[in-house]
Length: 279
Ligand code: G3P
Ligand code: CA
Ligand code: CA
Image 1 (tube, rainbow, N blue to C red):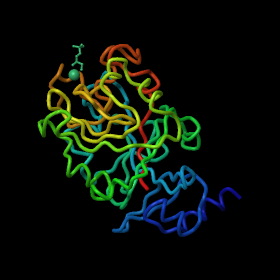
Image 2 (cartoon, rainbow, N blue to C red; image 1 turned 45 degrees about the vertical axis):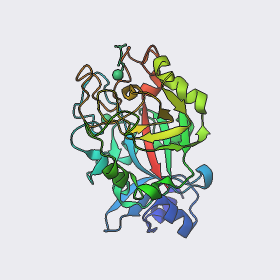
Image 3 (spheres, helix red, strand yellow; image 1 turned 135 degrees about the horizontal axis):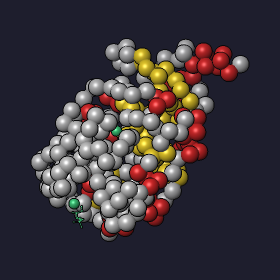
Image 4 (spheres, helix red, strand yellow; image 1 turned 90 degrees about the horizontal axis):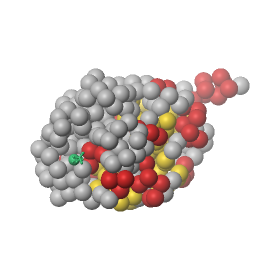
């Protein structure tokens, strides 16, 4: 039965979805138990199908209220430093209802990342089909930065005044699309942003004109310094119009809510959580 199948999953011992797939041949997407190197047991979603499978969901970035500026719901844009610490929050079933970060974020030794943009409040068994954009990297780039985002963001702190836009940005890594393409990616961001971005990448620790730092530019590589309109997360201080750009989805509604005018993203983008996977 279905319940027996789920009971069965509790028997697997793996540090990542890739390990569970490689060791036990599990091929079904869904919730699995994982164990960290220090013995912390947690449950998360495994994508066992995309491009060979074995992708572990480690985090989601969710915008609860774009009008609230660096409030408690902006866990990824605050001076708490959550991009580079071992704090965890949220639950896997609510990863599209609120922010989520599990021990895999700092524990898994990974090579690549996959990212899904999934409309808010979608239940996990519909994430794949409901997503508006899905892509992954294939170049094993995480090896160069310590094996996961915890270490990458230690090398590239997401803090105010760490450097200058473009010259001090973190890496931009080419992506392979599983849903969407370079053009559809650009269409999710505002028309003014369009002149500053190149689709087909995931970028890290992008800095803006005022020396504020963001964490991830999903699907794009910045070519300018207004990164607050196409990069998410941040160090908790954004000088321009302070505090208007301070939030998990930074300045995504700079020219109105979901208007897709000026620097505003489309409503679909604004109302979708960004799910981060490792493999
Ligand atoms: O990030 C956009 C800002 O730097 C310029 O916007 O509204 O003054 O045209 P605005
Ligand atoms: Ca949030
Ligand atoms: Ca700006």
